Length: 251
Ligand code: MN
Image (cartoon, rainbow, N blue to C red; front, side, top):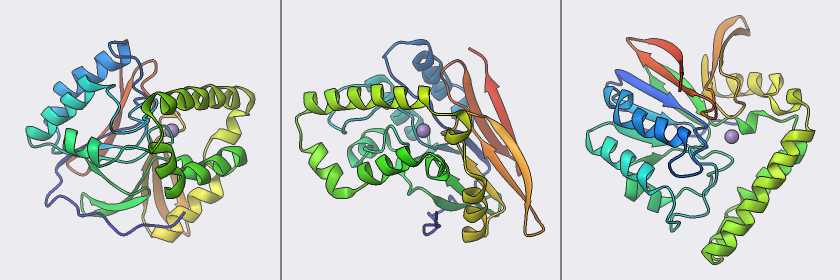
């Protein structure tokens, strides 16, 4: 994994809030209600919200009529002056310009190095770090190809929806038969990401293993913060006054 050019950082990021893997699916379910409350409540206290991928369980194109309530809530948050940034996850890598126009979110490349509290930090969804999952990485290289995405988006909406449902069933079967260790990040890939970008901190999601991992690379203290998924409860990370705090949000 190599670093992308740094995205423009907000002038004085004071209170940054991070979420990942909300995996919004059925309108009105408990996860969606909790996330809507979060966007209308806790998130309004942030200057910047970073969504580190897999906001949606699937996204078949910006012309999809689904998730209107979430899009409206993001638009309302943006309109209040909270700068909202989103990365693509492995589920919603087709979020595009239409999503940005509708919500006021800005898409960041994955990975991206941005400056937070005066320090360069690598933000990534995290799936690219799971290099032990060869079958997944092969799929990833196919669906992240621009020509593949153009062909897919040219299909009728109903066809895309059908294909996405099949892909999710395939993904569930893969997850069920693959050892948990294979689906976690690869230690060498993490080290390579630290070395390639020179950052001392990485923030990601994807693995659904919320934790703060302190380590050392070449004699330097480094930290990898992993956000949790929102299947059973919420998970968020605050950066305030230069300190990071990972929170579980009970449902
Ligand atoms: Mn993911």
